[in-house]
Image (cartoon, rainbow, N blue to C red; front, side):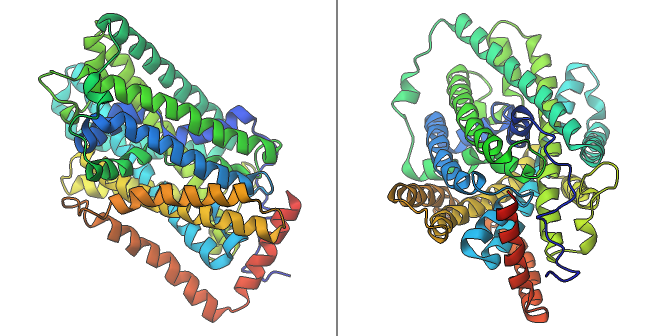
Length: 475
């Protein structure tokens, strides 16, 4: 029997069986924000990896398919709002589960802040196109605040509304990008780029470093697992949503990165210096007015991503609070909305404050996006590594371990270690050289809380284990 501090999440009080497979998929797709990659991430990856950008996305897609296969070992057998927190805890025990959960909270909330900065960037792009660029500073502040408050309101009110809105925004943005890519190739009349296919100028070191930011494009693909109590038929719906998302967006990222690098060859503004590369691609495709539509689509996509980050981050925080690992109020469920409203409030506040503080310190929007995105990527890579290690141990406990599961887990762990190593060696330029240690410092905060509880309330581990078992049985 759990104490008052450990209320458990097996019976969470969240709205059950309300989300279809498409609405669950929308959570993962929106958390990735596919429009963000060609709109902002590809130029940053190109700055490091050059003509190897498309290959970085091929590698990242394959690596994350392996990670997905590990995640789905859990998702096919149990469902919980705790996402990878509960999965890793089921395989490696509560200590590593808590570390994973806190790492995910860091990832989702930091990345939520990064995409608010990206939203503000595209609002200023639209403002400049409308001839009101002189209000950039005020518009930037207002865009960050409005984006944060809007995402909070929807996440607070209704998960189904959130999912439907994310579905509409993201799929509309993706459709616009595919139309633009097709228009460009029709205008250009060729698709072969010898420099890219020959990986001209690409080094092993630059390729490894570029992988960190390439994988940033996929961060959040696993967030559908946080809807374990709200999805219909979660043991089938969630695994399908997760693997389908990785494959679909992987194809999109390879296609758009290859197209942008090809299109910017010989341009006065290089790809790594473009703050709105899709607008430039619209001009090269002969439909410059389409750039405004794409910029608007990118802005809405970043908003959807911020909303998805709040949804997923708040549910992991909710699950941890129900286990006594955070203030008990974060484990409360709204009486009428059936959302973890206190956890949503806290998550939204963190997502909003971080980019505002950095902007107030006169850090450029794209730098905010890059810095926070890197920290968030390292956090989620760490969680992916732990879930790869946990999967075969979980299967062994259930007496379901197979040789193929071991091979997949080892391959996934190695694939995740490559970009982690690339973020450290060779040492990247400042401030990227200190960002891994910023993440470790944030991780230590959550680890310290758990260490304190382990000493002050030694029964907490057994009680968390009991609740995790109940979750598995209730699924």
